[in-house]
Length: 278
Image (cartoon, rainbow, N blue to C red; front, side):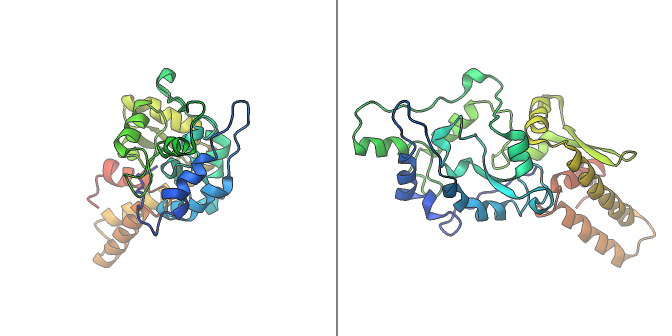
């Protein structure tokens, strides 16, 4: 998992997630007591192309190309079943493969202390149409206009206050800092593990709820690791001529690029284990 950056431009963010269209959709989340709340999956699919582009076509969790592991979904980081008011929140979306999303994460969202979980907002009975509109305006921030929704500082403080165990690649903290990688060349697998004892709960959550040590990933990461190790050996060999060294340097940089599969793992070995100044 590597850090991702949201592009906050009008061209990048579909109009459905901004301004009055966002509020119109959010109003549909208000139901009377006893009524079942229905979600419009066609709505968040409008974000899919942009989210896929920001993740370079990879799953935001496992970093495998979605064409390799499964088709990608618009994933609700905080599941809509538990955080219904964030169902149409653009900043609650990311691009994830179906295996990470549907087979592992599902509706799980573990916290360090479940008593800190956010509670659903409530609306007083008999609210007017204008009051309802103002109520849903504060469900979440407008992804483009900071003044058009819940204040950003308030939203971020509420999220941070939960003490989530799952790492979000769009958060300010770099998820790469939390993970280390352990190759087993005998069985041709590369495992993920915590980079520090303090990160054990986060690593365990990533393994349990993103499936980051599932069999398919262990083998695919090992194949990538073997190529990386070959390029490193050529690059560092005293017998490698300048042209070949430049070529292998370019290949190492390409494998570390955010658009490449398992870039976080590649950066770990190149920079932290082998100490290459690339």
